[in-house]
Image 1 (tube, helix red, strand yellow):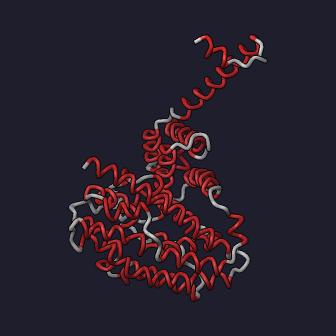
Image 2: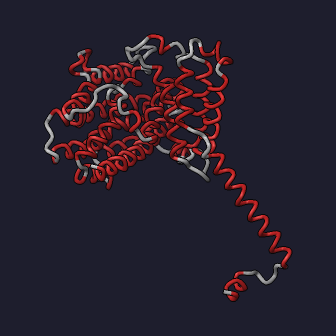
Image 3: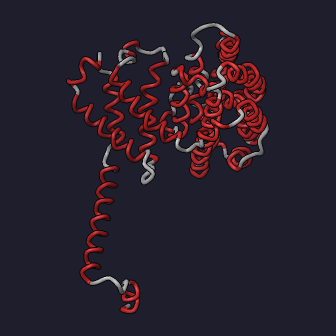
Amino acid sequence: MQRNLAGSVKPNLSLSALMERDLLEQRDRAQRQDQVALFTTPNYAEAEQALIMLLQVHNLDENLDQHTRLQTVFENAVAVALTIAYSNEYQSDVAHRFLHRILYRINRLKFFWYDDLNHYTNERSLYMQTIRNQIEAAWQAWELSQLDVASLKRADVVETLRDWSAADLDPALSETGRYFQDDMTLAGYRKMLEIASLDGLVEASQLSLTLGGVANEIHSVMTRLLVEEYGAGKLARKHSTYFATMLSDLGMSTEPEAYFDAVPWEVLATINHSFLLSERKRDYLRYAGGLLHTEISVPAGFSPYHAAAERLGLSADAMSYWTLHIKVDKLHGRWMLDEVALPLVERYPDDAWELLLGYAQQKFMGDRACEAVARAAKLADGEG
């Protein structure tokens, strides 16, 4: 024991220097522990409930000073979550989830849910806009830091779009895709549907936010895409109706947002990202690039889900949404490449690289979300 202790001491350090070093190390450990304690203090559920209550305040901006306790609880949690979600040292999934749930609750006010009209009294609240902008600024900087933006600016945009689209139309089956296709149980399939329902039951709604403005060929193609997603105005043919049919066939709730608590932050991030880009006209090219990736990749992405449903012996209704998209999105992908993305390159040659940024970011975030869904489904497999 004495030899081990002696061996661990550097011979060129005096006793006083060693004691000073030990004190410094103890102080550093204490500071780190204090920081961790600080960053794990917020009650995120309480803070989210505070947001819900603030959203219900009549004319919030004019009456915010009457709800300082709710404001303090909420803002303190947001401040801490921003620090630990987007810090390389901490990377807290719980903080990510809280922030994206907050963003989603604010963003969803851009949709009409055919509920109490008073729910929309704060849809243009400057306070809520400030909170949203604060979260989005930190989040988007963190997301962009994970991509090589400089190389995208140097790339041949047309050649890269063609190459990426061809590769994502018929990719090799990933390990995650193989799990969905070959191993996922019925319990896992139901969990996957729970998560996907948050977006599936309001599918393509963000696309509608991009369609106002001057008429042109690109605008017409995007409108045609939305019309197809919405079943040409017939509810029974709307794509979200097919998703509801899948849920109904398995005895699951078809109420929008019924499974909100099941959704991982990685999936919420893709939804919030779509909200962000679809309403910021300066990011129109990024949005179009992301939509190109979505439409191109869906046939291959949904095929493992369809194969799983067949393997599990489910009915045609219980896989109808996958069946539909595997078929129609091959056409939609061609529209997006040939009639939207490539014409946008010609129209905006100096900014065309942003199409690549949108595509690459959508792929990165989509793959991350898919892995999160697989983790949740595997957990459900074990519980089932």
